[in-house]
Length: 338
Ligand code: FAQ
Image 1 (cartoon, rainbow, N blue to C red):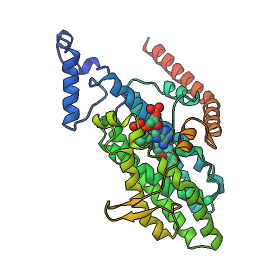
Image 2 (tube, rainbow, N blue to C red):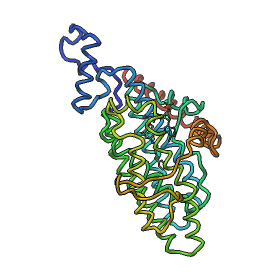
Image 3 (tube, rainbow, N blue to C red):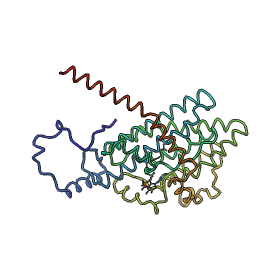
Image 4 (cartoon, protein in one colour):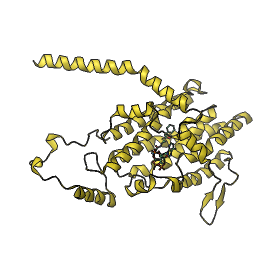
């Protein structure tokens, strides 16, 4: 899908006499980079890029990767309690997909010269961010459906424009991720639809889950544009294509008719169609709660991090064994060659 090459050309790839060529002055490199961005082209790992562009990408892609693997936890919690074999099989496949998305994204970030160990260190020490949404608990089976419908729905809305991101490996990884997320969203909607055709208790369970998740999903898109320090530069670089507020609005407009089909009420008394704007108006989002969660003070932050750290520590013997095996193989190959 994409290579994991760092920004160092292989000898075989270097054109003859490359070492003798004058290294272009930084401003020429910058001008070339700007021209590629302005022409809506792609920057690849071996291309020159400004340090700030590289840093921004590592920040966003690694946060995204962490979100995928921490995002496995709230749903993974329900694998052993899924109500049927069919639902269990679907959920196992979905959670496995999220792990795969994390791996594509870590690989994409590695192409920028950041090692996976560095990224895991940042996650495990609490320095790195991951999506606020995964710090809330999944209390009932309906939560699993709502995570698929709304959380994956919000993730797709945010990620479709990232398929056109200016950094090649990220954009290419997003194409497959979005296809899989689309399956995730639909299975969530379908699971909720069948509950909404069930008993009064099942319907109430779905409505309760929607009530608890709706506002958190709106906050997932990030702070309002006016309070988003990274947006202007991210848009200039073609990393972000659509602003936080515009994506949030698109998500609301797309979700309202889906809620009608399901027969659930979205918990916002101010939610109504504004014919003049051609969009739905909505009530205020609790940004104090959002920042508290982002800064480590949500209902499940400590539990999520502790689970990831434990999984990392428990897996140490696997990494040790793989390294020991690789060493032995190398020694054997050297003996045979001698
Ligand atoms: N949670 O200036 P901006 C998924 C931070 S994947 C936590 O607007 P930016 C799949 C932001 O990092 C979900 N922190 O930042 C799945 C920045 O802090 P920093 C993840 C947040 O980067 C589904 C500060 O606030 N998706 O769900 C959040 O331009 C189901 C200021 O914000 C991605 O990561 C938040 N919600 O825009 C898995 C997509 N929002 O770094 C399992 C890629 C903002 O300066 C089950 N990322 N912050 O210290 C993006 O598109 C962008 O990074 C945004 C934020 C839009 C998230």
